[in-house]
Image (cartoon, rainbow, N blue to C red; front, side):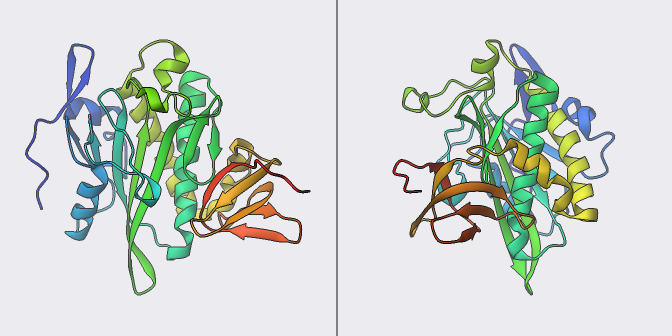
Length: 276
Protein backbone atom coordinates (compact mmCIF):
# COMPACT_ATOMS: atom_id res chain seq x y z
CA UNK A 1 0.00 0.00 0.00
CA UNK A 2 1.11 3.52 -0.74
CA UNK A 3 0.14 6.47 1.39
CA UNK A 4 -3.14 8.03 0.20
CA UNK A 5 -2.62 10.56 -2.56
CA UNK A 6 -4.09 13.66 -0.98
CA UNK A 7 -2.83 17.11 -0.15
CA UNK A 8 -0.39 16.82 2.75
CA UNK A 9 -0.22 20.15 4.56
CA UNK A 10 -0.48 21.40 8.11
CA UNK A 11 -2.70 24.46 8.55
CA UNK A 12 -2.49 27.01 11.32
CA UNK A 13 -4.47 30.24 10.87
CA UNK A 14 -3.57 31.37 7.35
CA UNK A 15 -0.16 29.71 7.25
CA UNK A 16 0.62 26.32 5.75
CA UNK A 17 3.23 24.00 7.23
CA UNK A 18 4.49 21.34 4.90
CA UNK A 19 5.60 17.94 6.08
CA UNK A 20 9.28 18.81 6.33
CA UNK A 21 8.39 21.61 8.77
CA UNK A 22 6.53 19.16 10.99
CA UNK A 23 9.39 16.69 10.78
CA UNK A 24 12.06 19.16 11.82
CA UNK A 25 10.32 19.67 15.16
CA UNK A 26 10.75 16.08 16.30
CA UNK A 27 11.69 13.75 13.46
CA UNK A 28 15.10 15.28 12.88
CA UNK A 29 16.48 14.27 16.27
CA UNK A 30 14.33 11.17 16.73
CA UNK A 31 15.57 7.61 16.49
CA UNK A 32 12.00 6.26 16.40
CA UNK A 33 10.03 8.58 14.13
CA UNK A 34 11.34 8.74 10.58
CA UNK A 35 8.17 8.77 8.47
CA UNK A 36 5.27 11.18 8.92
CA UNK A 37 2.30 12.04 6.76
CA UNK A 38 -0.31 14.74 7.31
CA UNK A 39 -3.62 14.76 5.43
CA UNK A 40 -6.35 17.33 5.38
CA UNK A 41 -9.03 14.63 5.50
CA UNK A 42 -9.08 10.88 6.09
CA UNK A 43 -11.61 8.29 7.17
CA UNK A 44 -9.36 7.26 10.05
CA UNK A 45 -5.66 7.46 10.82
CA UNK A 46 -6.02 4.10 12.58
CA UNK A 47 -7.20 2.43 9.39
CA UNK A 48 -4.23 3.75 7.41
CA UNK A 49 -1.66 2.73 10.03
CA UNK A 50 -3.13 -0.78 10.34
CA UNK A 51 -3.00 -1.22 6.56
CA UNK A 52 0.62 -0.06 6.50
CA UNK A 53 1.46 -2.44 9.33
CA UNK A 54 -0.02 -5.38 7.44
CA UNK A 55 2.16 -4.46 4.48
CA UNK A 56 5.28 -4.71 6.60
CA UNK A 57 6.11 -1.05 7.26
CA UNK A 58 8.45 -0.49 10.17
CA UNK A 59 7.92 1.01 13.61
CA UNK A 60 7.62 4.77 13.95
CA UNK A 61 5.27 5.75 11.11
CA UNK A 62 2.96 8.65 12.04
CA UNK A 63 -0.25 9.49 10.21
CA UNK A 64 -1.99 12.77 11.11
CA UNK A 65 -5.37 14.00 9.85
CA UNK A 66 -6.87 17.47 9.89
CA UNK A 67 -10.31 15.84 9.91
CA UNK A 68 -11.55 12.26 10.17
CA UNK A 69 -14.87 11.10 8.78
CA UNK A 70 -14.94 7.64 10.36
CA UNK A 71 -12.84 7.87 13.48
CA UNK A 72 -13.42 5.73 16.53
CA UNK A 73 -12.15 5.15 20.03
CA UNK A 74 -12.05 2.14 22.30
CA UNK A 75 -14.74 -0.46 21.61
CA UNK A 76 -15.31 1.23 18.23
CA UNK A 77 -17.16 4.15 19.82
CA UNK A 78 -17.50 7.04 17.39
CA UNK A 79 -15.12 9.94 18.00
CA UNK A 80 -16.02 13.35 16.58
CA UNK A 81 -12.84 14.47 14.77
CA UNK A 82 -13.47 17.80 13.12
CA UNK A 83 -11.15 20.50 11.82
CA UNK A 84 -9.08 22.16 14.54
CA UNK A 85 -8.41 19.05 16.58
CA UNK A 86 -5.29 16.89 16.57
CA UNK A 87 -5.92 13.37 15.29
CA UNK A 88 -3.05 10.97 14.72
CA UNK A 89 -1.92 7.34 14.89
CA UNK A 90 1.50 5.77 15.09
CA UNK A 91 2.83 2.29 14.39
CA UNK A 92 4.69 0.56 17.22
CA UNK A 93 6.30 -2.87 17.43
CA UNK A 94 7.06 -3.60 21.09
CA UNK A 95 8.24 -7.04 22.18
CA UNK A 96 5.25 -7.77 24.39
CA UNK A 97 2.61 -10.35 25.11
CA UNK A 98 -1.01 -9.47 24.19
CA UNK A 99 -2.09 -9.22 27.84
CA UNK A 100 0.40 -6.36 28.30
CA UNK A 101 -1.19 -4.06 25.71
CA UNK A 102 -3.00 -2.03 28.38
CA UNK A 103 0.37 -0.81 29.69
CA UNK A 104 1.07 0.85 26.36
CA UNK A 105 -2.26 2.67 26.46
CA UNK A 106 -1.47 3.94 29.95
CA UNK A 107 1.94 5.11 28.76
CA UNK A 108 0.33 7.16 25.99
CA UNK A 109 -1.92 8.78 28.60
CA UNK A 110 1.11 9.75 30.66
CA UNK A 111 2.70 11.36 27.59
CA UNK A 112 -0.42 13.44 26.93
CA UNK A 113 -0.52 14.46 30.60
CA UNK A 114 3.11 15.57 30.50
CA UNK A 115 2.46 17.78 27.48
CA UNK A 116 -0.43 19.51 29.25
CA UNK A 117 1.71 20.18 32.30
CA UNK A 118 4.99 21.17 30.64
CA UNK A 119 3.61 23.20 27.75
CA UNK A 120 0.38 24.66 29.19
CA UNK A 121 0.71 24.38 33.01
CA UNK A 122 -2.46 22.29 33.19
CA UNK A 123 -2.69 19.24 35.46
CA UNK A 124 -5.04 16.76 33.76
CA UNK A 125 -6.44 13.53 35.14
CA UNK A 126 -6.52 10.18 33.36
CA UNK A 127 -9.73 8.21 33.50
CA UNK A 128 -8.56 4.61 33.26
CA UNK A 129 -7.73 3.32 30.81
CA UNK A 130 -7.78 5.81 27.95
CA UNK A 131 -9.39 9.22 28.58
CA UNK A 132 -7.64 12.43 29.59
CA UNK A 133 -9.79 14.83 31.60
CA UNK A 134 -9.58 18.50 32.55
CA UNK A 135 -12.22 19.91 34.90
CA UNK A 136 -13.82 16.47 34.74
CA UNK A 137 -14.39 16.75 30.99
CA UNK A 138 -12.77 14.69 28.27
CA UNK A 139 -10.08 16.54 26.33
CA UNK A 140 -8.26 13.55 24.79
CA UNK A 141 -8.80 9.88 24.08
CA UNK A 142 -6.53 6.97 23.20
CA UNK A 143 -7.10 3.73 21.32
CA UNK A 144 -4.73 0.82 20.74
CA UNK A 145 -5.25 -2.05 18.31
CA UNK A 146 -2.87 -4.92 17.78
CA UNK A 147 -1.98 -7.89 15.64
CA UNK A 148 -0.82 -11.06 17.36
CA UNK A 149 1.32 -13.87 15.96
CA UNK A 150 2.44 -16.90 17.95
CA UNK A 151 1.18 -15.32 21.16
CA UNK A 152 3.39 -12.24 20.69
CA UNK A 153 2.38 -8.78 19.57
CA UNK A 154 3.34 -8.26 15.94
CA UNK A 155 2.39 -4.58 15.83
CA UNK A 156 0.30 -1.94 17.59
CA UNK A 157 -1.64 0.90 15.98
CA UNK A 158 -1.81 3.59 18.67
CA UNK A 159 -4.30 6.38 18.02
CA UNK A 160 -4.61 9.65 19.93
CA UNK A 161 -7.34 12.25 19.55
CA UNK A 162 -7.05 15.64 21.25
CA UNK A 163 -9.54 18.48 21.30
CA UNK A 164 -7.26 21.42 20.63
CA UNK A 165 -8.91 24.21 18.64
CA UNK A 166 -11.92 22.30 17.32
CA UNK A 167 -15.45 23.42 18.08
CA UNK A 168 -17.33 20.76 20.01
CA UNK A 169 -20.90 19.82 19.11
CA UNK A 170 -23.43 21.24 21.55
CA UNK A 171 -24.46 17.79 22.75
CA UNK A 172 -20.89 17.07 23.88
CA UNK A 173 -20.21 20.31 25.73
CA UNK A 174 -21.30 18.89 29.09
CA UNK A 175 -18.81 16.01 28.93
CA UNK A 176 -16.01 17.28 26.66
CA UNK A 177 -13.76 20.31 26.44
CA UNK A 178 -11.05 21.66 24.14
CA UNK A 179 -7.63 23.00 25.03
CA UNK A 180 -8.63 26.28 23.43
CA UNK A 181 -11.66 26.38 25.70
CA UNK A 182 -9.48 25.80 28.75
CA UNK A 183 -6.83 28.39 27.88
CA UNK A 184 -9.23 30.86 26.24
CA UNK A 185 -6.89 31.20 23.28
CA UNK A 186 -5.88 29.32 20.16
CA UNK A 187 -3.25 26.62 20.55
CA UNK A 188 -0.34 25.88 18.22
CA UNK A 189 -1.00 22.26 17.22
CA UNK A 190 2.51 21.89 15.80
CA UNK A 191 4.02 22.67 19.19
CA UNK A 192 1.67 20.22 20.88
CA UNK A 193 2.42 17.24 18.67
CA UNK A 194 6.15 17.96 18.68
CA UNK A 195 6.18 18.00 22.48
CA UNK A 196 4.06 14.86 22.61
CA UNK A 197 6.36 12.77 20.45
CA UNK A 198 9.45 14.00 22.23
CA UNK A 199 7.88 12.91 25.53
CA UNK A 200 6.49 9.64 24.25
CA UNK A 201 9.74 8.53 22.66
CA UNK A 202 11.56 8.88 25.97
CA UNK A 203 8.80 7.02 27.79
CA UNK A 204 8.60 4.28 25.18
CA UNK A 205 12.31 3.44 25.16
CA UNK A 206 12.43 3.47 28.96
CA UNK A 207 9.34 1.25 29.03
CA UNK A 208 10.87 -1.27 26.63
CA UNK A 209 14.03 -1.37 28.71
CA UNK A 210 12.66 -1.39 32.25
CA UNK A 211 8.92 -2.07 32.08
CA UNK A 212 5.92 -0.14 33.36
CA UNK A 213 6.95 -0.12 37.02
CA UNK A 214 8.93 3.11 36.58
CA UNK A 215 5.74 4.94 35.59
CA UNK A 216 3.23 3.38 37.99
CA UNK A 217 3.36 6.18 40.56
CA UNK A 218 3.10 8.90 37.93
CA UNK A 219 0.06 7.23 36.38
CA UNK A 220 -1.68 6.76 39.73
CA UNK A 221 -0.92 10.35 40.70
CA UNK A 222 -2.89 11.41 37.62
CA UNK A 223 -5.67 8.84 38.01
CA UNK A 224 -9.21 10.23 38.04
CA UNK A 225 -11.59 9.09 40.81
CA UNK A 226 -8.74 7.70 42.92
CA UNK A 227 -10.01 6.48 46.33
CA UNK A 228 -13.58 7.21 45.29
CA UNK A 229 -16.40 4.77 44.66
CA UNK A 230 -16.80 3.91 41.01
CA UNK A 231 -18.82 1.73 38.66
CA UNK A 232 -16.69 -0.19 36.18
CA UNK A 233 -18.72 -1.39 33.21
CA UNK A 234 -17.10 -4.28 31.34
CA UNK A 235 -19.87 -4.38 28.73
CA UNK A 236 -21.28 -7.51 30.33
CA UNK A 237 -21.52 -6.59 34.01
CA UNK A 238 -20.80 -3.68 36.36
CA UNK A 239 -18.42 -3.82 39.32
CA UNK A 240 -18.94 -1.22 42.06
CA UNK A 241 -16.29 -0.45 44.63
CA UNK A 242 -13.52 1.85 45.81
CA UNK A 243 -10.95 2.76 43.17
CA UNK A 244 -7.55 1.91 44.67
CA UNK A 245 -5.54 2.68 41.55
CA UNK A 246 -3.69 0.75 38.87
CA UNK A 247 -1.31 -2.13 39.57
CA UNK A 248 2.00 -2.88 37.82
CA UNK A 249 0.23 -4.95 35.16
CA UNK A 250 -2.02 -2.03 34.18
CA UNK A 251 -5.15 -3.47 35.78
CA UNK A 252 -7.53 -1.29 37.78
CA UNK A 253 -7.81 -2.43 41.40
CA UNK A 254 -11.29 -1.99 42.88
CA UNK A 255 -12.20 -2.91 46.45
CA UNK A 256 -15.73 -4.28 46.57
CA UNK A 257 -17.68 -5.40 49.64
CA UNK A 258 -16.17 -8.86 49.45
CA UNK A 259 -12.81 -8.74 47.68
CA UNK A 260 -10.26 -6.93 45.57
CA UNK A 261 -11.12 -6.99 41.86
CA UNK A 262 -8.33 -6.54 39.33
CA UNK A 263 -9.99 -5.38 36.14
CA UNK A 264 -8.41 -5.72 32.72
CA UNK A 265 -10.86 -3.67 30.66
CA UNK A 266 -13.90 -1.50 31.23
CA UNK A 267 -15.41 1.98 31.36
CA UNK A 268 -15.18 3.88 34.64
CA UNK A 269 -17.66 6.35 36.07
CA UNK A 270 -18.40 7.66 39.54
CA UNK A 271 -20.77 5.34 41.35
CA UNK A 272 -24.34 6.50 41.81
CA UNK A 273 -25.55 3.92 44.31
CA UNK A 274 -22.97 3.10 46.96
CA UNK A 275 -23.25 0.40 49.58
CA UNK A 276 -20.17 0.41 51.79
